Length: 598
Ligand SMILES: Nc1ncnc2c1ncn2[C@@H]1O[C@H](COP(=O)(O)OP(=O)(O)OP(=O)(O)O)[C@@H](O)[C@H]1O
Image 1: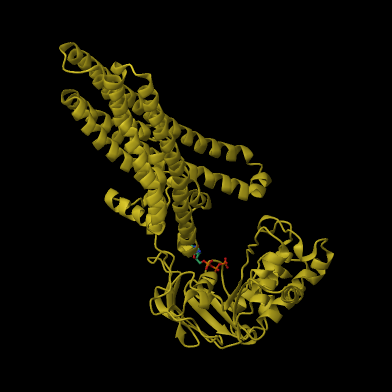
Image 2: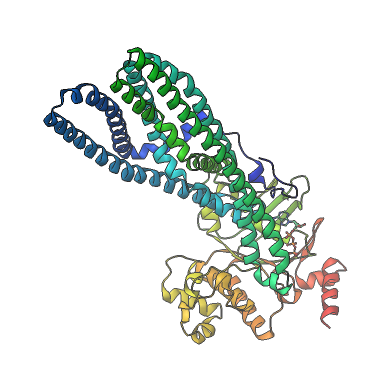
């Protein structure tokens, strides 16, 4: 289906990297999800098969009724036969109820499992993946895209089984009743079968497009709502509305394409089926007149044609569900095929309790390997030392620090802690020993207690309060009407910048790691808050190996060592006094800030 002009979908890595997932492989991968539910499979499919067989019996019963019972004109036998049919119907009703409920239990169990795996996979994917992807897209992949898989998981194999049974069974009976009519029917069936397969395939493609569309506007909503304060500050509502309208219209077009396919597909199927009926009626009439077919045979045959087509009709009726489920499973497979860039090595061991001797040895790294940000960096930090990283914006200070918890892996050289290459430690044990206070503090929409406790889940109230006290948050908590239970809004919007930073510091007090990375906030705070935060940070750094990314030189005078990072690497290092004494970049930076401040 063609995309209109100006209609290009945002190209993200995941979207363009659509794998060609071959059908047999896909079916095999899907089949493995049934394995833990074999009992349910047996119940649902067993009942479905039994129900299918009972359905087949009905036309034959009608045939016997017309040709053998009616001519006897014995009401007692007629009533008996109808009572027998009632019993069969009741049994069939029970079977269908079982299939409906337990079949869906099975389907939903599979859908839930897929969703859990997809979410788990998202948690495992690395920073680089998230650098490229948009949240809105990813939300769609775990929610809407998987919606109909449960339906397909339930109905797909069951319908297939019933289809096979009824096709084979009905056709055998048709041949038995009238071989000539059966042959005629068999000639027309492939046309209808082709239509179902063809339009189903086109719908699957359309659903994939719809998912991308939904992803695009989810991302748009997520950005506009997430950045609503910026949108309003620039009074750019009209601009956002226009962008959204374009996405919305794109989705509308794709959906209309779907309904066009559906309309044509349904018409084809309907006509195909009716055509068979008419041909059978015409030919049947000729055979009846010629004396080679009884009325009972004729009626039974027409009913058998109905049974024969039911699976096709069913597939057609759910033409939305199947292709949507298949497209959803493809999107799931695509996501799962994206391997986490950074994972535990096979021989990784949990790190012991670290002392914090950090060494960067000839470290080279670039987000794009062709354009390294860091080249041959050598840096050694003794346990408990505080090292301040300073230098021009974009020099790679943050990048250097993000290599330590392995948010990205070095491309050359290595990083060791206490002499162990960090790639030989398990990620969880490494990261549990590195505390990170970022410039841009992220808080979850919850209470102050929950946010502080994120540093160590399961910490007691006493421990949380102690961490809050050390982060100079106790006065604030005492002021709040709900104390620690105060809700702080999405991303902590109800807190001030300084309060958010102290929340981040409290978390790390609770976490109590031997290594610390402080990305100093650039925004200036009032002197009192600034002092409170500096005191809290100084206390936090005590006894821990600390890397501070410093923007204001005044805050790092007491650092054990100051390292000046420039785009060409480490330009110089030493104490504040040492560096000031030389006419190097530090002195220039210092003079610049000093002149600015005065
Ligand atoms: N996630 C990323 N993907 C691609 N490039 C990045 C990414 N993060 C940073 N960069 C680039 O890497 C370079 C170093 O950035 P980095 O944030 O490490 O600098 P910095 O010294 O910490 O700067 P600042 O003092 O402004 O915070 C910059 O050129 C930046 O554009």
